[in-house]
Image (tube, rainbow, N blue to C red; front, side, top):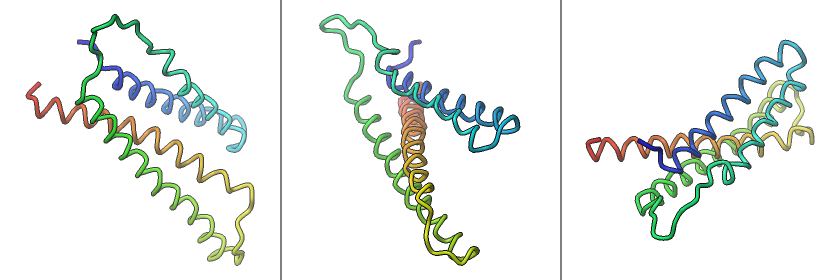
Length: 144
């Protein structure tokens, strides 16, 4: 049985995320944590997905249907809703920490990009997980 194209993309997204986490974990003891975050550059592989999984389709072939489009749309909504929540939390945590424990109510400009990256990663990973779960639920409902 072959995987639907969107499932391949979702598994690739999770695999790249896992590889980045492992690389960061391996580099942290060898270098500093901030230097090890360079391992997150592996996430750039997400950008090659359209070319990596491109398949020649003959006219009249059906690779995805309305159900696939509905699953991807719902997965995208779930992933981006989770990313919005992660963005708000990631923005508030430094401010609360600095104001409560450091008596400083200003957040360094160096921390301002962190919530954006956290939200992006949560959106991509959340979308992939949601798509896989929705495909699994559809398979359970169909009795496969």
